[in-house]
Length: 277
Ligand SMILES: [Zn+2]
Image (tube, rainbow, N blue to C red; front, side, top):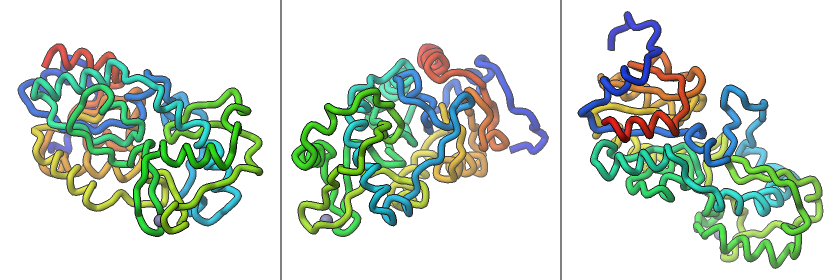
């Protein structure tokens, strides 16, 4: 990479020229799901929000009860969301052989819903729950039934929920909510989602690096790359001499590693790429 490139800001034709004829590894973030109605708390127009940490979740029983009460209401809303044109364009490009696969920081499974087959859910998935003691993983639907039995009518009593990337919903009255433990060992259950303060499992990281290595270029879509777990793949691609294109509405922490950046929405940009490449 030339270090003479100071401002990688480009246009859509620049992106097309750079990516044409190359097989792409794709890294996606919250920005690809905003058009599906899932808010991006890190986007340029987002309200400030302090993300929950793993330490808060495990260390504070009151916090955990509040969290599960909100999650109990909110997680179903994620399941009702639909993939948008950006998700569909990536699936189309995978079927056409242009896209090798998708590494996503989202836990909403909308890439899978759109038909993408080779997806690495870097930060986990909202539809699974893990026991922190015995590490057994169960479907979220199984826990939903148990929480429903422990807290009859709770979900019905709560209106005006807000959908969030981790299936949170804003609920005030949670102090009487009963949390469930692991059915096998009684251990603490946690959504199978990587929170702040946790690391992505090594095996998953290695698969993601391999996908980047297999590609001729890395396309980042809808991520501000604020966390290291995604940024490292951008740095890796740049260090191994691969073109990096970042499509995001705002600036990102990866911009200095990018060959071209495009400040644009992902739905329309990915749709154009699918039609052009
Ligand atoms: Zn267990």
